Amino acid sequence: MARATSPSHRRTLRCLLVVALALGALALLAAPALGGTFTPQTGGSPNANRIDSLYRVALWIALVIFFAVEGALVYSLVRFRARRGAMAAQIRGHARLEMGWTVGAAVILVALAVLTFAKLDSIRTPPNSGPGEAQLAGRPALYATLDRRLPPNGKSLNIQVNGQQYLWRFTYPGGGPTGFGGPYSYQEMVVPTDTTVTLDVVSQDVAHSWWIPALGGKVDAVPGYVNHTWFKIHKPGLYAGECAEMCGRRHADMIAVVRAVDPDRFEAWLAQRQADIQAANKAAESARARIARQGGLAGSP
Image (cartoon, rainbow, N blue to C red; front, top):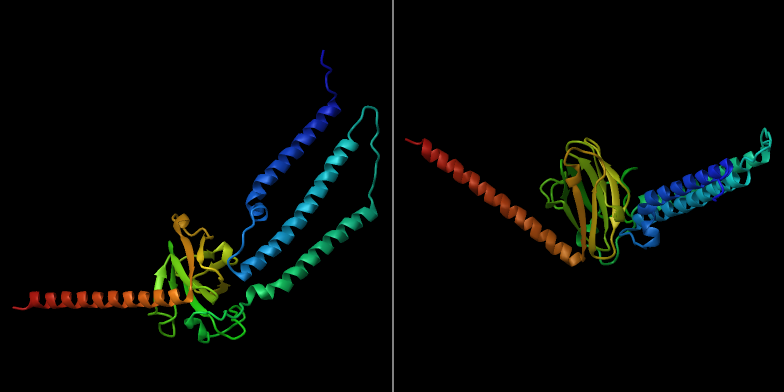
């Protein structure tokens, strides 16, 4: 005949089950965050790589602390579980232990803050383009402010990113001082490799958020305000992202793609894009003129 388990043994089993469920839930929730750790991935831009390295340092420190605390908790539950006839010791406090974990937590926070501020400037300030940069990146940028950082030589390929419900519009250099009239594209941004690209991010209607994970952090697109970011891609390829701010019922459709190509191919694509836009504008003007003439003929006696 099986022996009945004691109440203390059942409580221990329940505690262990709760801990196991908590660890399982943590593993499920942390799986996306740890995906890049167990399946190595490389970022497309130096600033994204530095952000990723900071995140990994904080993540691993947090994991070490978590498992240390949970291990101590499980050990205490098992080692000091209630026993029949035993009287629990009444302890008012342990000053050294309390001071130790307080000072330890403060030291960890200070170390993370120092590391973050040490890397912050290299994350915010773009480097110079490489020797094979696109020709459009060779001209000086318009201006630099506290928010908008430029490479040390002051030259970059500047693209205006305009968030609209529910797509992204990208305006390239080649227009007037305000940027209007230049070549543009929707949804897919084409950029040259080995070239520092600075972005001016704005919104036309509601708040959006520009986010290409492999190319840097999130940047809000706010009506009436311009935010800035940058990236530099070394290898040709596609980099996908999306709007990271709930902007309406078709928010999920507001995706973005950055396609990096060789500088020569980029120059050819931009020239062709500009030619197509000019041809479309001329065709529209011709159509308007034809409609005006037809209206004039119809109104004549």
